[in-house]
Length: 78
Image (cartoon, rainbow, N blue to C red; front, side):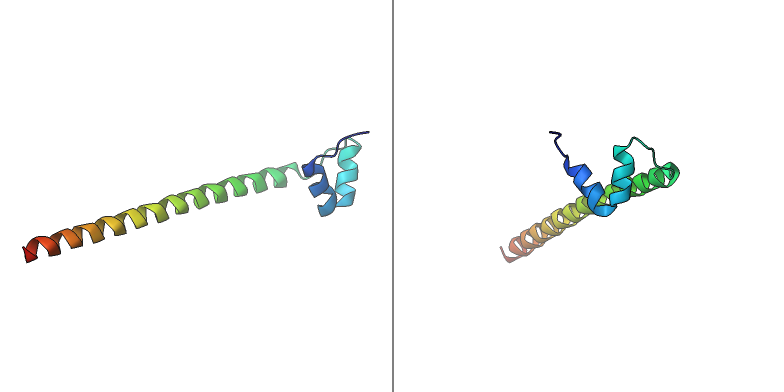
């Protein structure tokens, strides 16, 4: 009995015929399109990571500004 992998289940659910062709050892004809899709997914992943880092930086800068504001206000009161 052969073990099915999650990627195979995903392929089958997406397109049973493509899954069958893959099991028969046939290669896809649209390799260029698949490579382009892979590049688009990588670029999107990089943008997601960068946006997360920018959000963290924004919170750090906001916190630093608030700390500076509190410091300035308390030193003026004394």
